[in-house]
Image 1 (cartoon, one colour):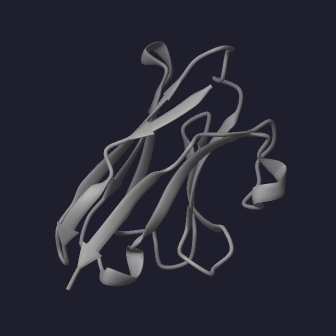
Image 2 (image 1 turned 90 degrees about the horizontal axis):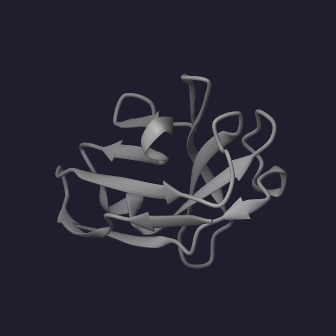
Length: 118
């Protein structure tokens, strides 16, 4: 089970940290990813991490930082310099392989809304 938290309303240029609490199985060997979906858009890969190696979607690296704390069963997404176009529902997801495709992730959280005002 994956449960996201930390979303909310923030002004442009601000920061948010999203958290994903994992449970139900051992996730340490999985790639943990963050996706986002804005209204009318497809899922967009934001960031992922597996064995401390990180991956970022286009335009994310440098502003977003993904991390994980396996002993605490947590995955985080630190988002800085937020822009209005970052507004979306953000999802935590898990995949048994390294991928940036949403169809390769077989466990998903319920999502948390991030809204960035201009």
